[in-house]
Length: 295
Image (cartoon, rainbow, N blue to C red; front, side, top):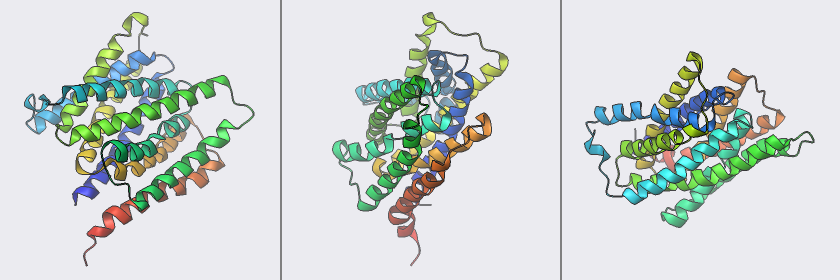
């Protein structure tokens, strides 16, 4: 498998794992405050991260960094995005929260050209625009419905802010991945978020049941493995090329919302799904898979 195809596979895998994490977080948001969820998700994400570094024989040597400031900026923006992402799940169904926050891939492609000097090809722009169009088809009907309440609008606002923060975090990951260990990037992020979540303890945490505790721990494990896969994908391919594949995660979110919470997508999803998947397939064929077909 070529590096380009491996990067695509890892990005898709990370989306599936992140969807599993979101389900666990959604299950916990009814009782646990956001700071507590951030702590559990981040602290237990350290387990697979350390295991990965030990497997690659890079622990603790792999944690050495020449770019401490770069890690700091990535951790701060990423941590803020995590708080925003989890907070939005308290106001929105899984699909809507996921969809709005995943406006970030379009921002990633633009920012990658501005800050990383990456070339955003025509096929990538078409794929990104198809993803945006699919997102709009899903979101706009909900936002224009007469029964919209303040909670929904609050969730939408948080989701948009999260998308912006996520885009900046992804660009920083791509920049760090050029020279830094993938496990170290994920490790420092999880550690920072765990500390930030722990600092919210004086604000009040709930006493989780065994079931809720298991869900919180599982969220961390899913998140840890997802982060490794995502960070490795940026090591093998440009952020602007991988951006459209983020939209595939919307499909997993819709499926998770239906299977676990009985959230049935509306008719708009029927029109949105071909746009979202089609954009990802276009980029894969034009920029990745086609060039490796034997001739």
